[in-house]
Image (cartoon, rainbow, N blue to C red; front, side, top):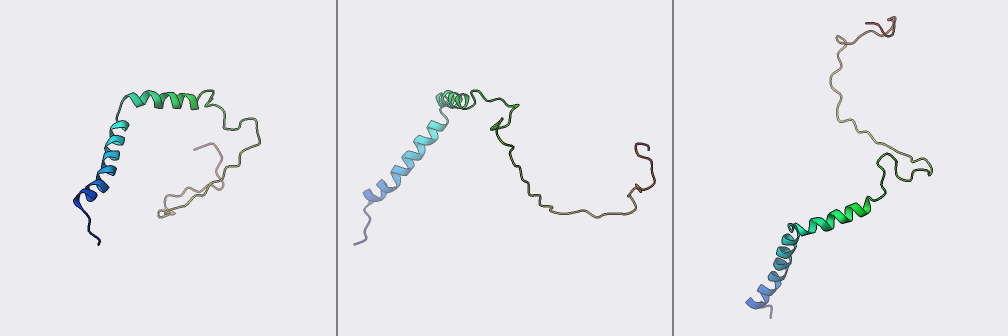
Length: 90
């Protein structure tokens, strides 16, 4: 009832292996590099690195989350007193 013939078993595993081998060869093919270069060049055509995206539109809100992993030991011995000193002098 649940027998798997050798021919069917081979067919199930051979197709994915053949596809993987063909894809691996096509990735390493140097002729694909020209296609990749053309695609990247087309995407970056008219791009100016000095301008932010959507330049001329409304300001872009930028948010940040900072997670502090640890704070090292604080020692009062190495601290400098900032009160009463003149600014700019050593």
